Length: 447
Image (tube, rainbow, N blue to C red):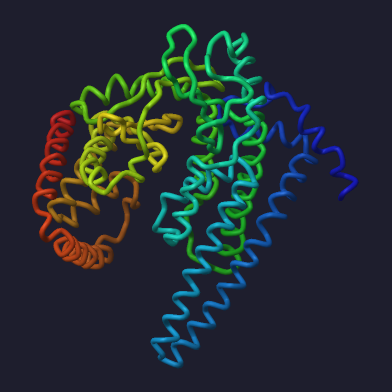
């Protein structure tokens, strides 16, 4: 195996980027990497060397946790229960840090996976969420000399002809999965800008990882159908694994096109900002190529790191902003992680990083409006029909079996909300008024 893989790194580097599609095309990507099996096997081995020890350790610890739980149940000791809970929290924090470092070592595709998981508290414990959120803007940077070479190649002229305060000694102010950002000035106007420069070799690296992940998902689907369903006799299920990967892959590939990001940003500036009454700001796009993007510099800090009073004041603004996107514009920012929501010097909510945006069909937008209205009214039966219309549930779902537990969940949620919001009626009424206003506008447009 070692002899066969020798030279795979050199072979990888000579594959022209022009051979790979600029938009996500699984067939075209597969056609390229099937011609270079050594490169694919070498990358698969690298992923396995990092992932397998981590996964084995997590599984071994899970077995230990279950044994501890059994002992705790048998002893019925509250002190032992506290010890087990403390140990679990410590273990989760340690493993979360390891997972973040693991994703960082494996490169941009896995960093994107980590970012995606960082907004899923329904899947991961708080310790993991906290660690993975660091992947949003605290990824190790690459050499500035490489970034300057890429900028010069993209612009077709020396960096100094276009930007001031930017050279090979410059230090990036932030680094993320696909690129890093520099603070500099436009030479012709003196305007302060944030310059985002894509990491080298993104098309090759991302397409290879997506090719391998898709092959893995195909194997998962085959196992579920051929083994679990046909052989073992498990219930029939819809195949979704490859489709799920394709959705992630299509979005990740789109983020490699900074010209598309610039178009998204200009659309938000033109369509969203005028509707928000000066409460939301989108920075102006100054210059864009496929791998370089310069936008107006925003002086401010992340909303998540702002004082509690600022967060409280801007929370209804954020709700208003994203409801407008979903229900009125039908076009929304799909990556609202903490690094992309800022508070500018005028106290406005500033949105940045428009590489991942999505359209929503008018039918779906109307169905979402209907669902929110029914949620506010507590109409569980109508909510189920909304879920069917939005394709969250199949049309033949057993409504009689589904409605009783849904009603119980809704009643518990209402009780919890009443308890939590007691004494906060003023803020709640303001938020309800904003939501009702948006829903009214959306209903008028739907009509």
